[in-house]
Amino acid sequence: MKDANQSALLNERHPISTQADSHTTKLVDPAVDWFIFVLGAGILFSVVLPIVIAPEWSAGAINQTFEFLTTRFGVLYVVTAVGTIMFLLWLACSRYGRLQLGSGDAEYNEFAWASMLFCAGIGASLIYWGAAEWVYYYTDPPMGIEPRSDEALVWAAGYGIFHWGPIGWALYCLPAIALGCSFYIQKIPRLRLSAACSSVLGRWSEGWLGRLIDLFFVVGLLGTAATGLGFGTSVVSAAMHNLTGWPDNIQMQFAVIGVVTLMVAYSVFRGMDRGIRVLSLWNAVLAIGLVLMVFLAGPWGFILEMAVTSVGQVLQHFVAMSTWTDPMRRGDFVENWTVFYWAWWIALGPFVGMFVCRISAGRTIRQVIFGMLGWGTMGCVMFFTVLGGYAMHLELSGIYGVIDVIQSEGPATAIAAMIGGLPLGTFWLIYLAVIGLIFTATTYDSASYTLAVGASRSLTEGQHPVMWQRVFWALILGLLPMSLLFLGGLRVLQTASIVASLPLIVIYGVMALAIIRVVRAQFVSVSSSASG
Image 1 (cartoon, rainbow, N blue to C red):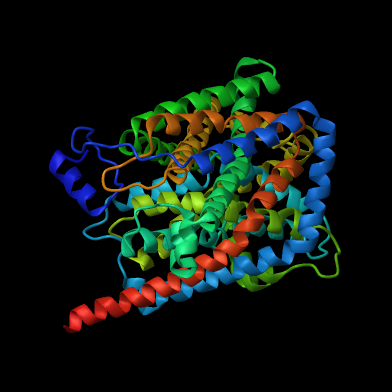
Image 2 (cartoon, helix red, strand yellow):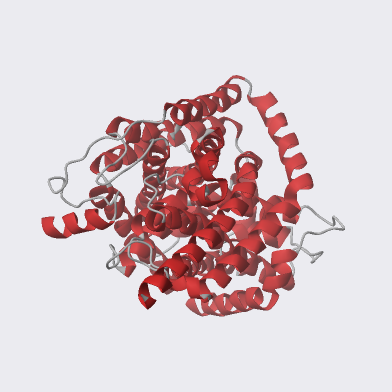
């Protein structure tokens, strides 16, 4: 823990840096932006009520919306994803990559920084999909491949890594760089999406257009954060069922959401260093422990071979996978998976970007880009190759029918059974339940804090969002996933991500232009100062 002098220095160079000791800086609560706050909460309730009151009608409307959006706009998501990673790689390798966000040394060490950005951006969804995603690709593969064939298995192992790899993390990284440029370089005291667009929009960023952009951010986060909590809840609920015999029903899942929400509210109340940072560090350590145990206790030879094969598959076909849109419509793989994932990353991008911006003071643009793409991708590859490889071995060897269980009872049930089959299975089921709770709480912890930041008018030196607003968003975030449990099914979660992300595609383009303008101006300024 930093001492008082260190904390004071950090707060001097980082206007909204969270202090380790509450006595080092006197905080003055900033004003709440009631337009964003009321409309954001109102939209949430307007979505929740129809789902609860008329679930059958809501399910039909959701299916129609999904088919319309993916058919008409699917290629737009593919182009946005490819364009984003190309732009960031150019930026990192250019002379502008040397520009520093803030002054002084990095506020957090590499492990703490990587842990916080990884846990904020992933959550318990990684456990859920890391073990189960290959099943969907194996039984319904892309590119006209024969289902359940050896070729389908290799593609299934590779596509999970692709969807959770560098392109996804690039979609997280672009808002982080844009916000970093506006906050640290332009010195705009508003950590909001509209501020990141200010060098392009000018005064419009402070008017109705800027408010609309910030509202899109809030709606996008509310819509997609529910998916993560839904996945995490199902894993914890299934683990508890295997441990206690209690029925894995909607009441159990509501109870899990309630526990997570209370954990988040308490952590947000404690602040960044005493709450989010501690949860993230514990989360990273426990996650590594789970993966190591599965690797060592499982068929580590098969896991290693499949890991090398799947990574090689992605490297060999990366361009084709990135640009494949299935124009002949031989299936709906692109719409159901690739478009869904790019929409999910885009909708969560401003939230993760805002959070990463907060913790990246003192790092260069190049360090942030390669750090996010590198650490994020490596963490996801580790989960997918180990958990997915273990599940594949159980299926192929006939030890456990992973595919049948996932198709009949859902991925969460299969995951709990897989972990319970390890040596000391009861201990690891408890471990799974705990890590599922912490993973989910960490993501929601970061999300609720970031929502409060986005719904504040400005945050100047030493300021944080008002406490009641931070706790409010922590509590309110549990409503949407609770309502989605009434409908169930993957399609609901996919549609929520696509609807929430569509307006943000345009904003991504604006942020890229804004970054170019800011870094060019800053580079000229730095060069002039150095020559003078």
